[in-house]
Length: 199
Image (cartoon, rainbow, N blue to C red; front, side, top):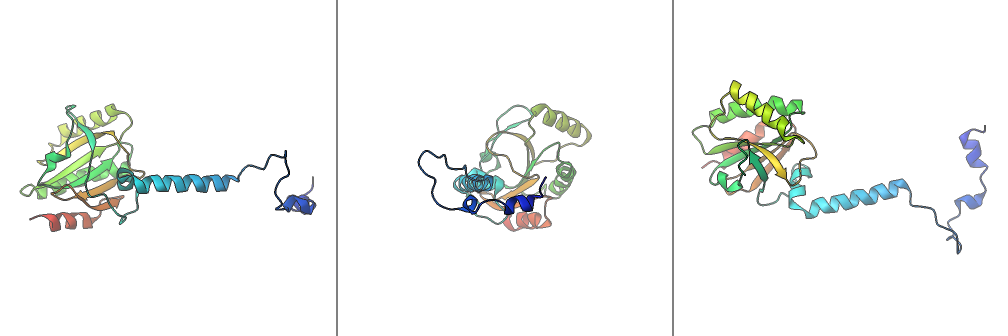
């Protein structure tokens, strides 16, 4: 069998011709790379035109939607409304029980919230597990071991886009506007943001 480079060199020059195909000849399909680029471009346009997608998947520092919206449920099954946080600064943390970094951060969030107990601050933990039972079981065990501090809300995402990467943290001001977005472990700057937003 000829080496690949010899076989390539033996091809007739017409194989590299750029002339249009003649009638009745089916043109070759677009290269996979071109199709992939087009799909990526379409996905980028979708994200750019959808505020919810932008919030979940845009790079840190990109333009953020003015208002934070969420369709989620509490452990009791009651629906959550962002208006419940009116007048409070919130750290919104998207997580999954399958994410080790997320689980480690939950304890940190609770501890920091304890330090803000006399301030209008809330921590909103939004779970994105595929199976709701995984979230319920985890939260029930954790709440038995550690009593939830005032201002902690544990929710499960019911509808809408989920983050492409976990964990994701949003800092939301008292007017329900997203002012900062962090991917990965909660950055110390997030708590500085909270302090700056308090009256």
